[in-house]
Image 1: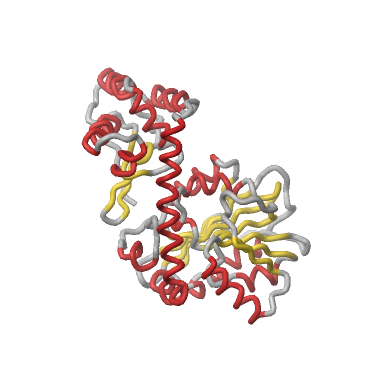
Image 2: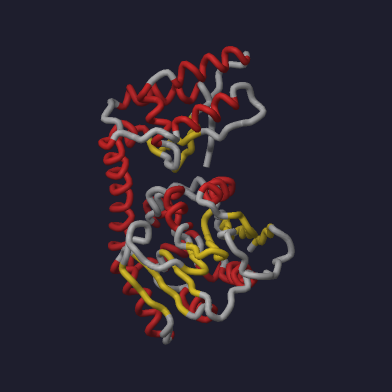
Length: 343
């Protein structure tokens, strides 16, 4: 992911003036509010604010010049997001105070409805892909990273967390169920949720084949439907298929029991845009800092991280985030807080 924030002025007074100018417009403030936990393209923002593309582009340019937004490239598309605050730069305190105030704003109802519509369009595109591609799921997954390439590293981290024999697990988007046998061996009860009937049927076949009697498969929307919290919530190569990853982590963090863990296996940021068409990826991986920042905002504490390099140029990050409210007891270590593996 390529992140850029433009700040075209250097004099501290000019910097403050640019910030004040950028914040002196109601539409720009609402754009900043909309970008609090989201990334949007120009056309999406034009749809959200019912404004022409040229007008939105102008406002984004003003916000970019003030260092308030940054861009990230996803293949041929450019998405806008809030820029990270650089605490040692002039105007950083004003920027922080401005965003704190912006976050107290409530977006107009019609704007929020159009944000939901954009998310729904992304979700529909992802669901349509999996409905069409269930039969070739494994072959497509292997184009990027098949489970055998990183399974042992994930299991090493999972086993280090020291769950007891009565613990429960929740897997979001189990795909063809390839990871379910490992979870079934380690947890008393496993709930697997998927919003794709075709993919859920593949997981069901796996459970029948392997005799996984402690796995419950449900057709459900993990971000909106009601279901029980678990000691360990697992997202295995799922986040890059979700319409709003930061908001998704916030929702899923609420499904981690006190003292429990969120375990994420995800692609690091990459520029192989063919994955969008071939594998249905909405996002081309994520920066390591993004996952940590989103998890912290959701009330989770970053734990151990593994980084696994693959032969085809992709890199996988295996991340552990804990719900810190209570302790699960002593946990083993995997020789340090961060490991890198090349395969």
